[in-house]
Length: 458
Ligand code: 4AD
Ligand code: MG
Image (cartoon, rainbow, N blue to C red; front, side, top):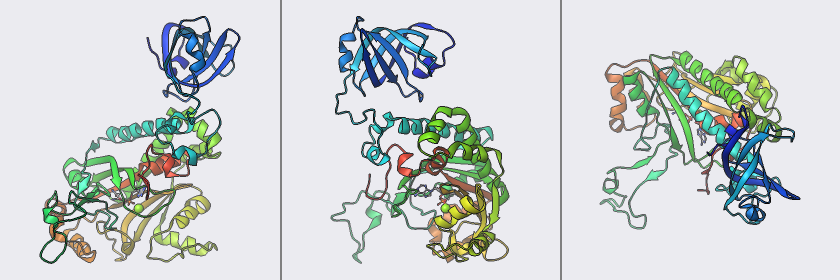
């Protein structure tokens, strides 16, 4: 019977007749037998197998180099070696697939830069393997959080004709021949001849469709890929990333902020509980302060400050930033990190941003200058959540859309939610990769997703 290394290492008693299959991490030969460290990806640790050279298949041991795949049958017995409770005393050895000396992941340590050149192999390292397991657990914890609260998981379109964020960072989707697109009488490209009979794009956010579904189902969330043709080559931006977007009917900014803070706390707690070996590894090799920071975050309430107060803090702090602090403009990454890392030393929600810095759909506050927006900032990463209460008043929404130069006719479906039983509602987007950077201490978004897409790299 095949068992996973994870099951073997947590066994309560010795087992007979079990098979462990995986990839050789290292092999040490001694007189008459060899020690083979096998990792099958099911957990951080390897299982050591002791293979007698007289066993069936043992002739192939010499070819079982690092990276080779093997199936080893045997008995799970208490291990005399320190640091491991069990080892596999082999009764049969099978070399499944050879890997020769050219396998790039030999025992020595590798730089993350080198690992990025082999995305198809790097999940076999402790670092990326751990990341992928944490990523999987975190995805399920996202679903657990919302399902437990009665939210419906909805799927919003990936191909869309609208630009939710209005930032124009869209990837075009077309089947027209780039060399000779059909043209109208005025010489411009005739998009009505394109596949969807209009210009279409990969989505930057499922929010607008999510709002319409929240106005039917109450509380909904999406969890899917989003795309941004943002030409910013930073350690925090990817062109393709995953976003979690809850949308809640009968909810205001206060409820929105609370939900985001509870979600982030829940995810941090789950990681601490369910991925202890992986987090120990990241704490030891990637970010020495990780565990201390995560425990702090799991226990303490997050700080909150209005945008206006945040600007005052930044203006008073005596630092010179690369970008000047100006009321009315979005906070830059360096400002956000100063607030969360230096001033508050805690995750921080900033709310009530100037309306000039934000998209059309955010609810206007009575001061006439700000909107009911919020961003959640965390130490080491900066913004991980962006959200708002939505403008539910028809006249205000239409005025804001006109001010942003949107074509009202093509957003008629969105405006309908305000015409038929409009309700106060709110939501946010949590960047899944940013969350993973926070939970693992990884400093670059390229190392928290299996196949990163960034400008110039697909
Ligand atoms: O702040 P953003 O742009 O907000 C929205 O898209 C809203 N429509 C969400 C909503 O209210 N439903 O993006 C939300 C989050 C950011 O806080 C960040 O964590 C992540 O998405 N994000 C990115 N992550 C990686 N690479 C990028 N290029 C990202 N852009 C945004
Ligand atoms: Mg944002």
